[in-house]
Length: 395
Image (cartoon, rainbow, N blue to C red; front, side, top):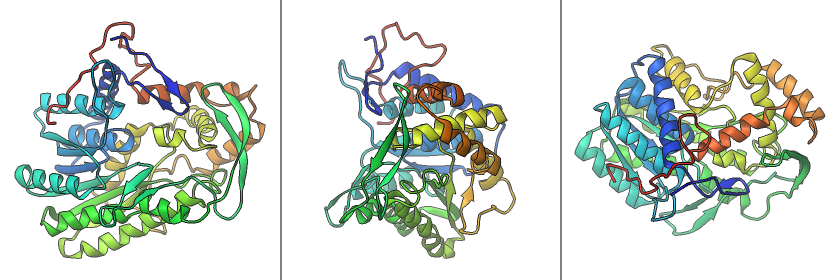
């Protein structure tokens, strides 16, 4: 079938299997170009199919020759209907990993559930014995608590008072003002339940109880802080409370790892175009300005560049891992440079529908958004018939 992008708001309803495969191959080539890293050799990535999770799996496999298990929740294809992009990404990853002689297996299901945790545990026992590194990179708007059976929904809201600021429709380029009402009722609690550290703890407790964590094992979860421009709706909003909980969880997991000399970290990463960030008002405008400045400064990074730097310069550098005053790894250091943030603050005041294409990188934002779904890659013939029925070898 001929597959074209079909947009609905901040979601693309289609994904291109050949484009997703090219995306994965491009990331693999980047990792290979940077040389080998003496990193973990047996790696579990929870949330492994897109964004930072996918980049982590690729970096582990092709940077450190690691055996990897990837857990994700993606829609498989059906006749005449494409899979979600993460399905095609994972199929391409496994294909390339197996071609390179690397162990790679995947589990598709709800990572919040006890069933998927047990399935993962059984796979580790059967195939790998123990795990050296666990990456926790889940992004979901809902979570069914396996203990209570309650479905929790996260919200993106400020706390205390209404938030009003600029945003942009990245499809049309229209800059407008948006207002978001403050959190009410159980909004904060539900968001913490979905996006906080409770499930991360459950994963690590389950793995440790089965003696599946090697001595000195490390686990890393991903977070974001961002600038003062977005903090009312992000870091000081409902999502910020969840991130606070996630970051505090790293300390409790580290305490529980004392007997295996293990460690839990939160890595604060850069703002990037993801399906999740595209849904957050204000963020697309911020990212389009950020991209322009970071590209001009020669310090722009995508997911794969960020994770390669995290691995090479922080986690596996052979030196003590540098953290901030709250124990977090700061790989957002280039984004948060004062000169970069000062320029964004100035451009933010100037940004209008008429000048955004000039003062920002809206085209770069759109390209990255299309790339998420496998569109816009050189070397892919988008006018040719594509086979939507791609299988993941281990599933």
